[in-house]
Length: 383
Ligand SMILES: Cc1ncc(COP(=O)(O)O)c(C=O)c1O
Image 1 (cartoon, rainbow, N blue to C red):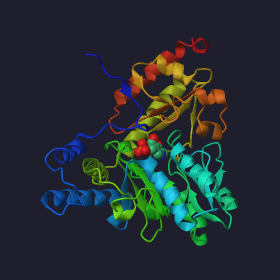
Image 2: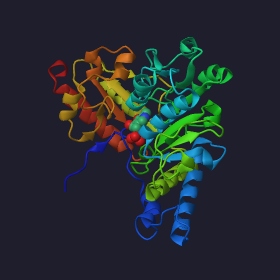
Image 3: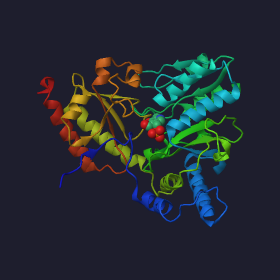
């Protein structure tokens, strides 16, 4: 039997929790009703969707379950938030503010506003730790600004943004604040009221739920225009027969997080710190990207000068990790996030993203540190 590589890519996706699978199975087999149907099958499905909506709402601190709109993932949620909110506020010629380190889904949605709706888009820069300065957001606003979109936690370097401080700038001006929280919701770090956001994008597969399901939190009273119309599902904001098994899985995954006796982040952070300390000791030229402490607990973005991360990973069949982010891997272009924090193209290409999750053990971390060190030593500069 071949052993599987050590999985250190939890920011790309997480394994489905078997309790989540168990909750989903009836809705893939016997409970196949359409939640819009008026009969018993439909009612069972509709009840399951309601329960899941409540669980996801509770995960993010929503006041009411109706504030959760299910989508196919965070990519779609980002599009619904950005296009939907901007176009509801101003159909043509408005201004949106975002940052230089957003996920491509956010940057692409903003670009659609520019290309098709006469919008201007400002991408605010970040500091060396990947943090946006709230004053820079304030300076970028114009009388035409309708939306500010700042991610909560970065998918490559893990840096957390000061959304509450940004909200203090946007709220008095009546500007809507959206956050892409795909990476932070699973750590129990997202409270929409504490942060003051009106819109938040979520993804189930980042928190041990199934792929192909996500949600947009839409604060009660927030105006957004549907981007997909038809049968009027999801309060008319996202048409299409709901993916009931996936929604049930998302709800179950959210419930596992909110009902856990002890939150996983401290354990995950301890394992990440252990891996970080070992690698910085054995590879002294390596450096860590992202904020030293305001960072996702499982994230370790490591630059090893002179070693292309893709080549290093080729020599590491025992480890499943990523160069930069999984989403930009394969494009050949150095990561826009790493270059935005000041890395050269060469340094960006020498950057490895290791991400630890709920299923990682201390043994995984220790073995991974040894394997990475040995592989680095096979490169001429380190031999
Ligand atoms: C920050 C961030 N936003 C959006 C997405 C896209 O999420 P999904 O795969 O659910 O479309 C990801 C996933 O990689 C992400 O990390």
